[in-house]
Length: 210
Length: 269
Image (tube, rainbow over all chains, first blue to last red; front, top):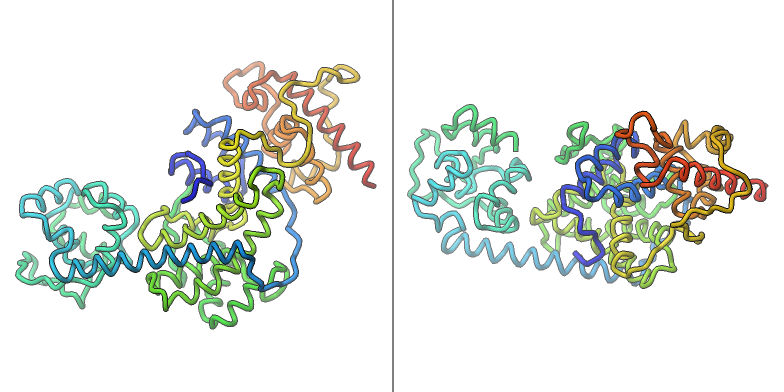
């Protein structure tokens, strides 16, 4: 990000988005809730609420003539955007090469650290092994769990995501207690993985709430 | 069916309106050239107009499918510039040209907005684009206002939304003393603001020219519906408590604001 953003905590930015985009538009009740939760920013939030109210109260903007020409500013922005995509693609390739050749971040964990990670997650070793071997369909792994996993490990969210979203690693030499060993071709949904990893009902509920 | 949104607000998970869901369903079945043609249309009333909420969804979906691989980013590379064009027009209207480095600020805002799409691919950005699929204009307004305020603080420049006199100190030169009756009836022009929370174009432009303190009092009173003050309940949130001044000062500001608006609207007719 450039400097063109405030120093509001991320949760407050989300709360402001929610306030601005609520079905009834910005309301006094919403503003009261914001200033109650973030009293140190009350004055700024009130000023922002006034600006958002004016935005909300404005009648529809005029239609502009259709025009496909791209301004120099947009060209530069798209260039930065594509550079960023290239960075991401390169990082993905690097991580995938690492995963395929040596070990993915999880695989460097010893048995003890794997167990310790399971404890921090409030899960079982079996569940952590499924994460390691990417047998869980990444499309079903919520952002909440990914953030939680990053918190419980020393890896960045980017590394977590690139690991989870990569091609599954064949689980060579890994023994599963379950009779049905996950295979790369038969990935489980996140919920299925949670339900079939010998987790208690409470552990399952906690993970599925993330 | 479009992927459900993951963000929540105080009402629960974010849900797109049925109109947006239907438009997304239709758009997902159209080819890129058709979508590009629809995205160029800038009249929201035109039959083939593609809502910005739908554009956000299509770009996100396209990026997820392509997973940042350059050769497959066609959807993003064709549609994102058109979405940015709409944002650029908005910024040209809304970011005061008198701000120092206004042009640079507009470009920074566009760049940061575009990065929300890229950062999602690596799980950063916190899925803020979900809000843009609900009400794009208000989400972008929130993003823009945050950026402009941060810029103003950094530049140590007190921006106003529109030219108007600074008014941190109350004007004590009112012709006569303020009374409650002066603001009891805001008049028919502000009725829409109170009941339907809408302003006509003329009135909106007039409100923007008010001094910041007067405008703030007006909006908190007539849009948000706060009482001016609450002598019997000091804990109650009122216009006075939000502005950190007395109810009497708020009354003066409202009186002045209403007189100014009436005068401007009379001149305009």
